[in-house]
Length: 252
Image (cartoon, one colour):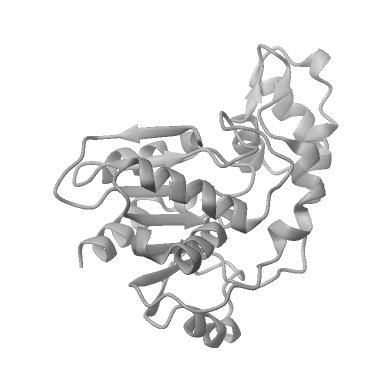
């Protein structure tokens, strides 16, 4: 099963499962998870091929959703779910294929569509880091900077760096091979009519107005909200606003 970080104890509220995005980890969500755990138990998962979870040659959304379903089964069989980017697509497929396991769904800055851009350049940047010259995270950040990776992403990527063993805790080869699946969205029949919030960064172009009809076909109860001044990494850029929006939706 996926590696998880558990925040807080079970309460009379449903547990909350958090699914991170590409190149992320459960640790990235520590601050928000701890704050939300004042009302409910929060479980942040490391997705397959990331951080401390298992590596596998398959990285499609059906497999990723099955991983989350197994985590939910281990914590009582039903949960609220928050997913960002790749984790948001996974959460959507989870709701569509395992709808009885999801009570409320928050999809953070992603839509159930295929995107034309690729994240492969960051894999190439991480592959290019010369580990023989890495004694601390800042050494890797400096090498990433030399390749044009922006400051915020340098810090984000190196959270998945195993400095002691001089390797990435990311299965870069499989993520590169499976990138078309990651950037796409599978054909899933049916819909899920549970409460769904599509929460986006106002400065992001990942959830465009023209996607709303398609979203509502899959998620008829979908609501939409934007966080001013935030881009795609809305939970990192505006953590208090993100937390407040999620809390309000879950408690409504």
